[in-house]
Length: 242
Image (cartoon, rainbow, N blue to C red; front, side, top):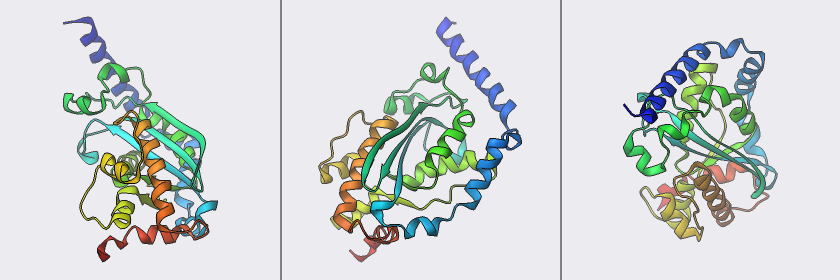
């Protein structure tokens, strides 16, 4: 067996051991326990009452081993982009994640992340505090954002016994309202509609940056900056009027 294959096998074994050692131990960490309480106490209604131009948004994108969060697939890359109002602050969080399992070739063909790329990357448990701290008190944004939220909620539920309560906005739904279209549309299709150029497609950071720009352009089409965030959240459900 080639040394590279052996290295990948040992890397996965090591990741599994690290994961088992940490499982069930996070809530005994005072910082994680504090995070648990912060997530439980978050008041989503208070966030949605803020004017759009005074709201902190966090755009999220993940790359994963597959599409089924609750059937064994895991995050292998994550990117978080901060917006204040509809302007980028320049603050980001980006990292590869060791999923603790093999990345199927079919997934690698899409995002180009290999087992070797993530062998020395942190487990999601090891960056969970950083991820949750970055999200903080914000409105979550993304393209098909339910996908990313499912993967994050799976790990939060397993390790911290809680889930994200944050209000969210989906750029695909905002596109449907803006265009009058129905159906499901890719990031490329919506970006083309809004005149947004995507760099490094199917990387977490590239897609997050494109989604952030897409969000700001669609939001400007749909409502005024001084309106509460709830107005924009309500608008994304108006697609049924077409």
